[in-house]
Length: 214
Image (cartoon, rainbow, N blue to C red; front, top):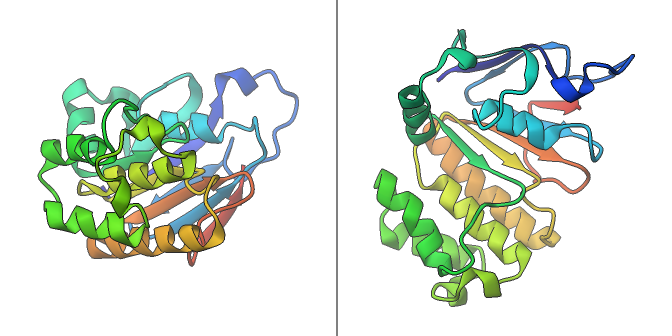
């Protein structure tokens, strides 16, 4: 996947509003593979909805979203399976991890499906992100900030052309946020992938090509 385009996209729940001031909603946008984009948003302006639309999780929007010129509303279930395995990765705000499984098992679930990373590579991430001692700890016993780091590792256990991260550092201090940004950048650079980050304040410190106001 080389491009993601949004053509006059607007959440249906916003359709009755008299005026929408946004760099994203009701605009024409094109994101290219390799670009780094920051979407700054106030709470309630639809940033998580945007991520869900692009991931095909929801379709309650007006307008058109295209991958390489193809309207995603025309994609089949098999198309979505392939896209999510090889082209598009997502770190949702609510993380969607399994609290009863260990930190390692949460990452392993994804990596077993993709066979993308070796166990030793994942161990290096755990060490770099400061949670090597949480490897076998049930996720439900970790802080939310620690869980965010686990969710990042899981999101990186696949090939991708674009990775979306919805408020990925909301519960991290500056130093851990910097380390997360470095790990993410290294993996994205290896694949020439695009990065799209949403934020309502604190955000990953990256060299962004574009900053948009939602």
